[in-house]
View 1 (cartoon, rainbow, N blue to C red):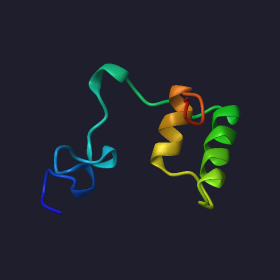
View 2: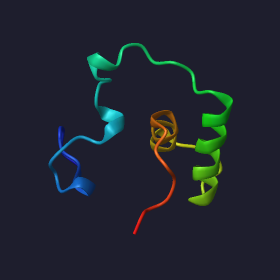
View 3: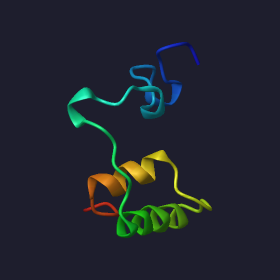
View 4: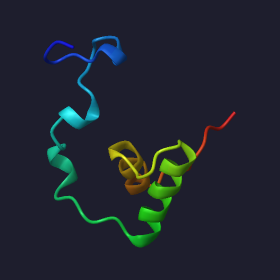
Length: 69
């Protein structure tokens, strides 16, 4: 992978873990126990032993789990 591109993303953007936090979001806040449980459930459903950054971001945003058809 070259600097500034993401081979999994077609080389267009950096992955989310390499981007700085947007300034307009302000300071980060700890996840509530319910949101932590949501992130852990998403990780377990994906076969991971603990949540990754994407699970935590999805839980913090409050997005519904699963895909709508």
